[in-house]
Image (cartoon, rainbow, N blue to C red):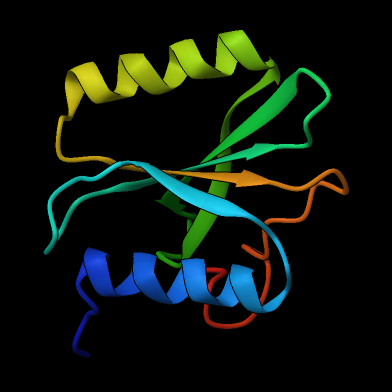
Length: 109
């Protein structure tokens, strides 16, 4: 099965969020072809949640919580990940209701 480039996936994700009136910003651009993606969801109350794509025990791609809590701590987790992998993309989603759409079809894995 052909895989989408990371840049294409990120563009489609940002567009899908825009269609749902959810503000999102690429805060770090990684490798266009195969860079990993981190999604930081910030409900604008001083907290945040950081998601990373991973694999479950059946080999399916899933989004897992990498960090959550005070936004400053989540930002530090992002910086640690970027120090290990400078090709990582970081997308910040700002929605007071906590929406990120990662559980929707086509984005969930």
